[in-house]
Image 1 (cartoon, rainbow, N blue to C red):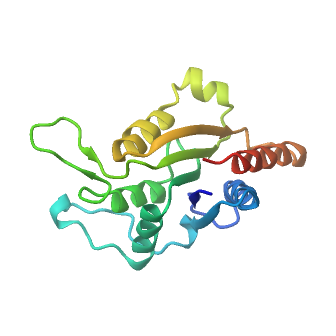
Image 2: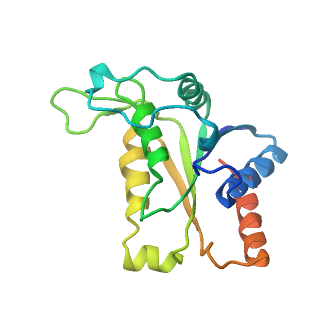
Image 3: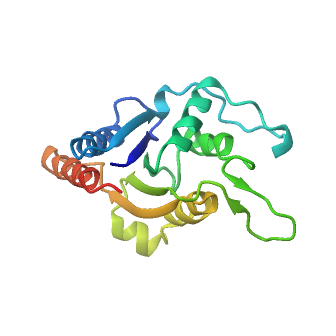
Length: 193
């Protein structure tokens, strides 16, 4: 049994991205995993880190503190988010800025180029909805959001990436195509961690 945190990273409640996160969660539960789900759309916080340096970082609001507690509790993190302008929605990026702080998620070491990874021992998986077909995202655009998410966010903090799954195209998809996507998310949940 694995402790799994699922973050529905869509800023709007009731999105298809949220449905994928829900399907993953439901299926992970059927395999005996312990699952907690957080919805970005329900979290109340200021996504703007501001102009302060890390030493004067704003205090975490209660919703962000609860999310941080879930991050430290879990063994596997699943982040589901929509690809907007080739990256994360602003509120999700703001969440990363506010929660993944030095001294908590990573620690700078004097004289070293890369920090100590304080979230090591955990894995991460990403579910991404997009209107862009997957092959265009990879071959034409170079999968920039994947590189940022896996290397500069997850790995930087010590979370070992275990999969980056694109669900696309969403725009123009019919019920049958969406049912297949939901089934795929459910399959990922059943074989989680």
